[in-house]
Length: 495
Ligand code: NAD
Image 1: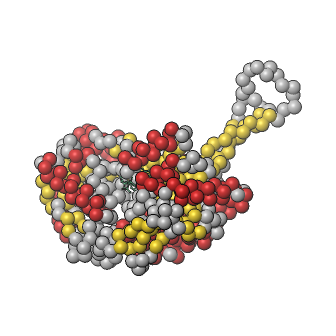
Image 2: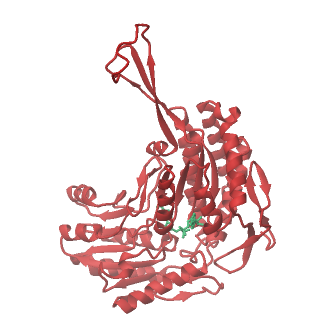
Image 3: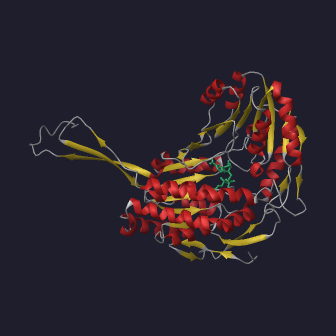
């Protein structure tokens, strides 16, 4: 990709120049090279995209399309993503710095999401309600909402966009996407594939740009029926307040500070790899990062040794290199934020057992060493706040009661890991943890079939599985009087 590549918005099936005429650079975080420039969107561009999406939503060609045919389109889109997976994985890896093999893995799984919602498309229906009056037929229908605004982050752009796009389209909505300003390219390419799959122009539109400009304009637009947002808790709170004041819904997938708990009866070697997977995979830039590790006192030393040993040998480098295990942070401010948190931890009294330094890995990029902090407790900011980098805080505990209390002592509730060979304990602790996803003897597993929901400040609403369909439909109840009898007392409530 040349330095001068310029991406336009994608609106109504066409590449559209920004009203402002302005573009902004996207930087490869491994090298600091400019990868491309993207259109800087604002309220006018958003308005154009929403109008296009609304027109398509109302067009009989889309509105009256059978659910089975929507499924065919989604299946075709999944196939196209599969055919273009390598190009998309490379683009995404260069844009956000995640390992090529991680992005290849995500891309390999992505068609399954479209396939899942393709299969579901013609199995979504209402029900008949047996009200007390035999002469009344009361039935429910699930209807699409209209234009859905999707606002997404940079850490897994296509995967997180797909979590919204596939179910939203499967039930007949149209969509305007505002991808992260750090990763515009693959979402724009996805919109081209949507058109190629046979969806009508305007079914999926992409306006690139900054959060305070294009993002805010999308969240504020009067013709949006819903906002589906993935990103930080701070931005999510603003969107929640905004959408609530207009009585439209929002699905919010937000931050996390997830506990990863290792009990004394765990397979400690596996648990140590689970800890590594939880916090060092993707350089810790995942909402589900297992950033708070609790190890039972009797296995604490062994776990620490295993995790630290592996952390020290993690190969930092070019994310496109197959041998690399840790790529850069996605942009300079993110690297500085991570470095700032580790310095804060030091000043709070934490000991850096390994890592704790920024590096350019000889490539000029924004890397940070895998870092293990000890001598930490739940009151420190490094343990309470989301760092979104490769920084694990590891703490000992004595009892199950204590660790459940410590694990739940957080404003977040996205995910949790439990490592134990005791079946009763596994289920008991899963029951008591305040988090939407619990992994037992595994970590960082995801499927389109399995719903996920953030508890507490980690979000509102469900993504994936059949449950997410409710987020993209509204329920209508239709009452039909089948009787020709004269109307009885018109002044009383009927049933
Ligand atoms: P962010 O909130 O800064 O940005 C997310 C998106 O919102 C971007 O597209 C951004 O441009 C836009 N945005 C920013 N300000 C806005 C505003 N005022 N109005 C409308 N849109 C606005 O988050 P980020 O730094 O891109 O992503 C990292 C965060 O995302 C982390 O907190 C992480 O935990 C979270 N995340 C959550 C999940 C999940 O499923 N729960 C998944 C991935 C990431």
